[in-house]
Length: 271
Image 1 (tube, rainbow, N blue to C red):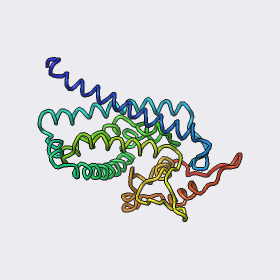
Image 2: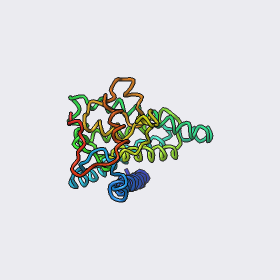
Image 3: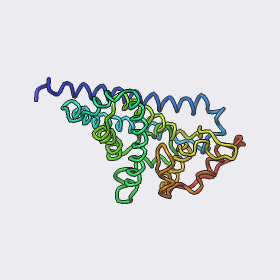
Image 4: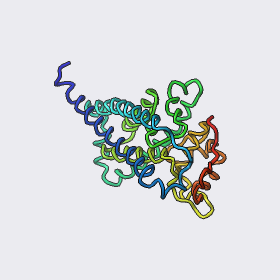
């Protein structure tokens, strides 16, 4: 195989890797800097847990996340290769379907990814698969924005495969994929941020109850047998996997006025 043959694929991989690393760095460092440094004092009452993970955990999570990004870019070559070979006509079909389909396909892609995440997430929590596929992520019992992509190799591959599978089935433009990725990393870094940022009603329940909150996923890291959803709460509700104390914990996080010196917040022990 000549260099001229592999050059487009190498160029695509380098472009994708650079974009993915930059995107991850901007969101993870940006969320950390904004919430943990700049707004740490104003948002102190919204901190879900009093303790913070050690600096060593943050550095390790960041480095492992970069490894995951490299895997995402590598698996992304599958989509590029199929498209270049003419076996993935979806982007051309989607372009002809017009702007309405552009936005419909984005919403459908996000909803479908939530389903993909929920069921693959439950699968790798099986004790026969957990150590190989998901243990790395749950070593971050007290998560940070850098936990977002802190995956074992197998989990990174599972996460990356959604895009080529989706694009083989549903006509989707490449810019839609870009917007989906932006939404995914934004929700992922915020969901691991440790600060409850979602609004609450007067009775303490989530204002948007169909969306997963930061407390929702933080509870999953505290007790791994609950709250498998990524963006939406409906799969956990339908399947009976929502943490029984979720709403109470969310109300606690959003109603807290502040912590007195030495005050601690009880939290479930790791499962």
